[in-house]
Length: 128
Image (cartoon, rainbow, N blue to C red):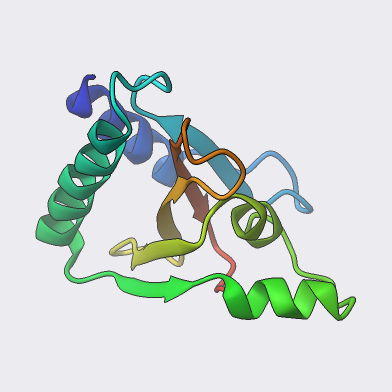
């Protein structure tokens, strides 16, 4: 686990151009992906949250239940929020200073709780 490497990746994603005018986001998986213990994943997420909070202030924290309900009703939810809702229950979002971008961090633990992963997205789109 190399937190410095993941911080550098997030910095690069915050600065990088988006793939196209229709794909206005970057998604990355952080950490090793194969955690020795499930609790290690959540501890790593907590360390990342602490570092981003030191950098950019307190995150907005919200659950994806409302988005999930809107999807169920047939509402179109844009990416990366659609993918986030499918994989995570709880997220944190920071506004990137001097930018219109935001970083969203979550543990993707909705599908298989025995193998959670840390999901990060950089986008210009506010949560719907």
